[in-house]
Length: 304
Image 1 (cartoon, rainbow, N blue to C red):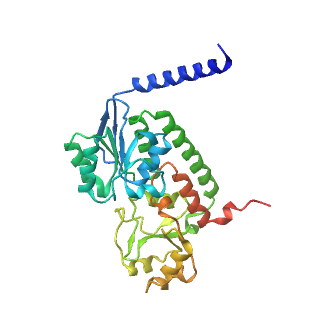
Image 2: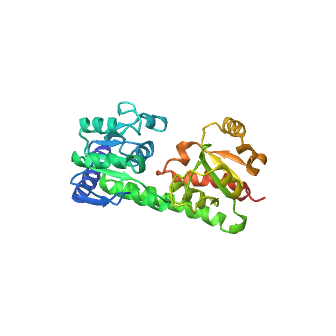
Image 3: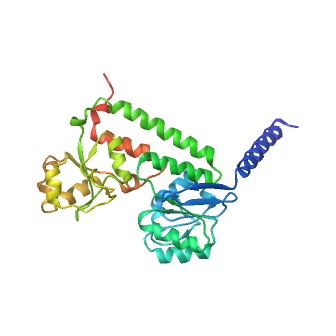
C-alpha cells in the first residue's frame, strides 16, 4: 500500500469510528432555552434556522451543508446560497407553513417572539429546539446542547472552551477596576426608549465587558423607559447598534431631548453592529472584547 493510500485509509477509518461513536450517542434528549425537553433519535440531516445567530452557530459547528432553510436576515452574516430563504423571522404564520412544507428533522428557533412558533411546530411533530439565553453562560450551555442534538459534541466543546478562556482573560484584565469606577451604560435599542433590562443576554455582555447596565434592576429583557428615567440614571456612555458609527452618532445627536444627556454632550457614544451585540452566538467573546476595548481602551494599550 502506498503512503498516500495508507494515509487515506487511516483517515477513512478515523472518520468511520467518529461517525459510529456519534451515532451510538443517539437518541439524545436535552432541554432548550424555554425548558422544553427536546429529543432526536438520530443525527439530523435536514435543519432549519429561523434567526441569524442560530445560523451562525450551526455553520460554526460545521453544519452548513445540513442547513436547508434560513431567513432573509441570515444572509447578512452567512453564505445562504442554495438555501431556501423563508423571508423575515417575525412572520410566524409564514414560517410555520414553509417549515412544514420542508419537513425538517430539526428546527432551531429563538425564544421571545418565536416562542409560539415552537408550540405550533410541536403540534406538527416537528422537532424544535428554542435557543433563548439570558446570560453568556446560558448561551454557551445551549451551544453545547445544540452540539449534542446534531452529533457535534466535540466541535461545540472546542468552541465553548475557547470562548470561556477568552472571557476569563478579559475578566483578569478588567478586575482591577473598582465598581464605583465602572462605566454606567445605557444600551439604547431605540429612541422610543426601548432599553435592555436585567434578563437580556446583552446585560451580561455589558457586565463582562466591565460596564454596568443602568437598567439592570428591571426584570425584563427589553423594557420601555422614559427619557426622564434615563436622565435620572445619568449614564456615562450610550451604546446603540448601527453599522456606520459616525452616521449613528449624527443621527442620535439630532434626536430632541436625547442630545441633552451628559454622555451626548461629552460625545461618549458608541455604536456596535447588531451583527455582534444583538447575536448570542459562538463568537460572543469577540463582542464582549469589542465592548471592553471601547469602554477601557487604556487597559488594552501595550505597556512601554
